[in-house]
Amino acid sequence: MSGKEAGANVDLSHPIETGMQTYPGDPDVAVRSHAAHDADGYRVSSLELGSHTGTHVDAPSHVLPDGKTLDAYPLDRFVFDAVRVDCRDLGPREPVPPERIPSADADCVVLWTGWDTHWGTERYLDHPYLSPVAARACVDRGLAVASDTLNPDPTPTDAAGDDEPDGLVAHHALLEADCLILENLTGLDAVADRFELRAYPLATRGDGAPVRAVGVV
Image (cartoon, rainbow, N blue to C red; front, top):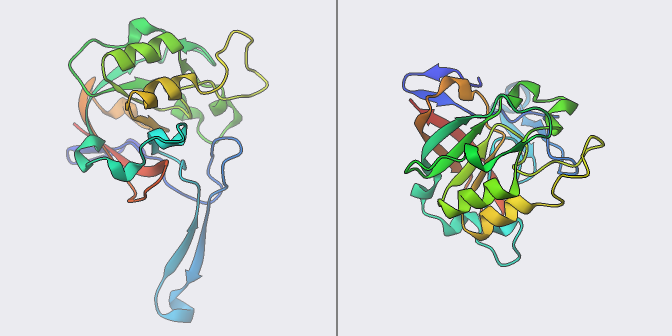
């Protein structure tokens, strides 16, 4: 499913399924049968998941008490003129430097780390992250940030270094400036360095929601 081409579109989303990887401490994901053809004559599934499950978008209210919720945005805010930046040379827990942030006229920088190959493993938690200076560069250029990692900030694990920023520095910098964040993309090898990214969230009035992220090539 990930990164497979269908006509001019590329699916950049992880499928939602029982037991899928989440941010540490977030709700577990469960997809259960509620009704079945044999017993009921139709099929209905029950979904249990957090608002930041899988491939998703963060709204400012995720980290800001008075921040915007997703319903405050028109649909066209979830269609991005995106620039893919190759960050596959970065190692575990290595920061993306500000020099990687493009100056091109665009809406979104997409950080292609290749870390989606570790999806579902402990190694996925030790991903490269956006340095505070790089996050500020995104803000200065009005860029949303998307990546194939769990988090634009370092995710806390036992491998965390003493020199890493504490907390959600990149989240705050971006969301305070109304620059949206998209996390857990996959299959970025199938798009070009410049492409249209469509990532419409579920119609919730919340702090974030899963999206079906699609690259138009």
